[in-house]
Image (cartoon, rainbow, N blue to C red; front, side):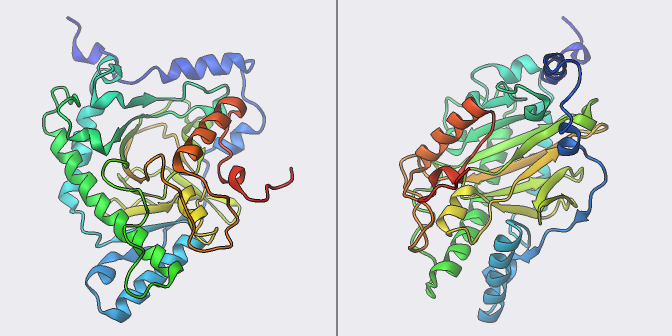
Length: 351
């Protein structure tokens, strides 16, 4: 029996890198280094929202908090929450459980039954280094976490921690989504009933991410540039950093704050808000020296739910979440990249 240190823990990302490098003739295309580079960029603090002012403040404080949240969603597409009600102890416990999970042998993580077969790594459809993500993840449907058939292997405590984190992040996501919706609908007595429509504990996802240290960090993404195909995402990350986002047509590096939760607007919220809230392109850069861990909660509706609009006229035609997801997958397969919302404009842009 081999010693634990001899068992492969990391997925074969280096093999993928070398294969793509060979397919590109031993070097990367000229545009790739500037797209991927983790060279020193402006480091920014995201707009900070004290969620306690919304949940326990007076009327004036609640309005100021909601106004600041809507402004950040419009100008940045990202913001960070303090006093969000998710305990530091729970977030630290989640990181410890993640570390245990990702230390499992690669062949164990990859087996079909573990966490409902939700494991993924790299990018199987990558045709160039621009499309390779140096990362591994478990993208877990919330509905499966409590199911008896969901295999947690020997990690008996992981199920309970994931359930707690999912419930806590769900509360945060629903509070933020309802607040942002109310700002656009003008409902003084609260947001539309159960916004977004079709979202509940059976339709959302919790994604556990690990970005292993990468010996090719200079020309490799941790996670390729993308926008999120949901209503909104709630993210907790460690102290390592690596999240970059597009602000004013340039990449900026987000200064990590492990006690805060990051919220970013997804494509569906941009569509529902008639482009008032922005789903912003973001990426993770690879780190040459150390691993990075994060956990993300995705607020998603059911596949047959109409995304809808905060009011007509809307620039988008009616579409369901399922239709949107299918089109994204089709575009990635045929063009190598996601096109997203432009596919659903009532009056498509002329190329």
